[in-house]
Length: 144
Image 1 (tube, helix red, strand yellow):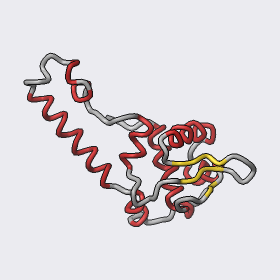
Image 2: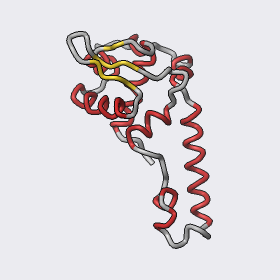
Image 3: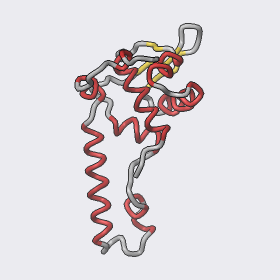
Image 4: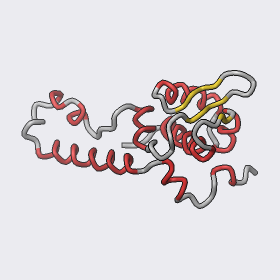
């Protein structure tokens, strides 16, 4: 399993918004510049994050993106699954009836266990915790 660029950029966007604070409107260009996300791609990502109820898109001259979920309650799992859907490692985990061996397959059990552990780890990583452990604030990186 490898995360897509869309997932990576969504995580960067939410990390930056979490740093700014819940409810604070941040310009899309500012997020794109500080987090090195192509601006047109950020627009697409923002649509998905908005549909998931994680952010709100604010229109107008002072518009931008606003985090509507507390960084304490928002996890990597929430953001990743809002972009790519539920994490699974093999079709048989998502749709057991797709493989005739699923009910008795020892490999299926390993896939399920691995999936559960990945989801648990990502679900334990709140954005508040990630910010607390960050060495440099997201807007302190040199743009040169």
